[in-house]
Amino acid sequence: MHILTLDGPEPRCHDCPVRAACLAPQAGLCGCRRSLDCDRPLFGRGQPFAFLYTVRSGRLKLWRPDHRGRPLVTTFPAAGDLLGLDAIGAGRHACSAVALEPSEVCEIPYAGLQAALPGAPRLMRRFHAALSEEIVREQAVLLQAGRPAGARLAGLLLDLSARQAAGGGDADRLRLPMSRADIGNHLGLTIESVSRQLGRMRTAGWIAVDGRDLTLLRRDRLQALLAPGGELHSSA
Amino acid sequence: MHILTLDGPEPRCHDCPVRAACLAPQAGLCGCRRSLDCDRPLFGRGQPFAFLYTVRSGRLKLWRPDHRGRPLVTTFPAAGDLLGLDAIGAGRHACSAVALEPSEVCEIPYAGLQAALPGAPRLMRRFHAALSEEIVREQAVLLQAGRPAGARLAGLLLDLSARQAAGGGDADRLRLPMSRADIGNHLGLTIESVSRQLGRMRTAGWIAVDGRDLTLLRRDRLQALLAPGGELHSSA
DNA sequence: CGGGTTTTTGAACGCACTCAAGTGAAGTGG
DNA sequence: CCACTTCACTTGAGTGCGTTCAAAAACCCG
Image (cartoon, rainbow over all chains, first blue to last red; front, side, top):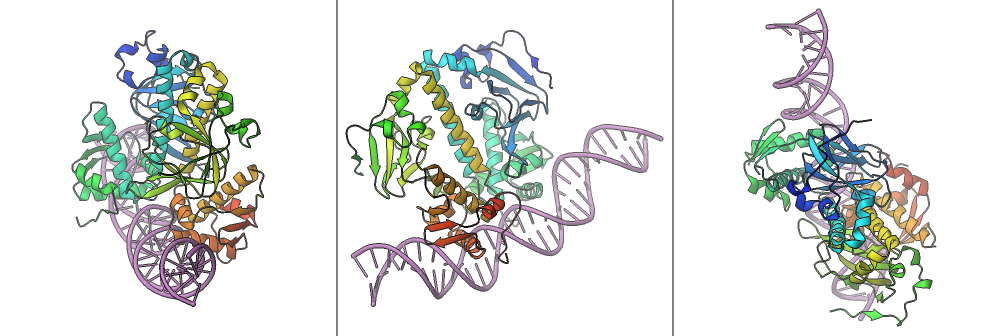
């Protein structure tokens, strides 16, 4: 279906930017590295599960069908994130994954990981911690439900900012790799609502928007938007 | 703080009603069984994590603070459910748990489980599957967001019904062990909305309500409510 | 029976949605 | 180079669902 490019024969985990977050080195599984072009799928829902993936660079989009069969964007994984944990139980991927921009992922064969676990208690603990933290992360997403649109969007922007900062980038100048439609879908909002909220934030002078390039001007205001019923008035 | 009653010295996993769902027998950890009175906490958010729990009987409520510090009910675990997986990563419970009715849980020491895993590949696979399925379950809850109130409530009722049926009970006669406030909180609705939705379902002749006793009369209608924009009109 | 809690019901408001139009940039073909 | 198409995004007007505010009714327990 889609062509996969494998980088050099020797992936060299030792100089990997996300070495600390990846399970592969500790498991002795420094195997394949995949480069994904923009819009290239990494795996699809229903496909047999064989690999976990650690994102090395770039940005992906994960989604699954909702109750009406329409896609629902669950996360936008970035460097350091571990993908595929939700497929272990069923043996098939519950989500589909696609690259939003040129990205690199590290492929971790699950069979090999499984085989390595009994002899590596430290690795096993890290693996269990990763699974558990994924559960907590999903719960955290749940907390977004029912909050006003501005709070949800502010939360996403600050999350993207924090991730970018963690990767060594500028925390205030964001490039949104996803469309407004993806953002809205992920937040449970329509495209129009996303656009309107961004417009209000821009009018208020809290952000600057230029297409998919975005600058955070008043991080404190966005942060305040997260908490209570603190709402965004166009008069501010 | 709270007094815990331990049943007889020999828990006898072999006649446990949820034997198939519990990890303890396979791990050789048929240890303590706890009986919980109504409103008795099992663990609290922030407490150090030491045990996983399998629910043997009864019904519990799990919750965690939302972004505003107010409690948000995450699940209503019942017989066969495994509790505490979200605490593995942080070493502290992310949720608080309380019994909604007299309940029994089986206590699984996590240290013992961890020690048993390397020598029991089958157990390890089951454990990983349980963790992974918990992730998928959380994702499924996420799908509820944004759906109309009737659909969310119908979903909960049918889920409770299915669980009761799985436990050998009558699928159509439900006892709701939780308050309207808990239901509303769990579904992201106000108490009033829950009451109104139940009222409409009752008026439509789809359910019969008597306080916390509830009878499903038209399961097909409730099922239909789940899917599309199929909405509940008071004229039906 | 009285005091409290829980649940139900009513009325009006507000946020996000739907429907609809308009703007702007990128790509295509004459 | 310019008309035309296409797509992503923005903006506007009106509607509906669930909320908030308010109060009554039913239930529990002493």
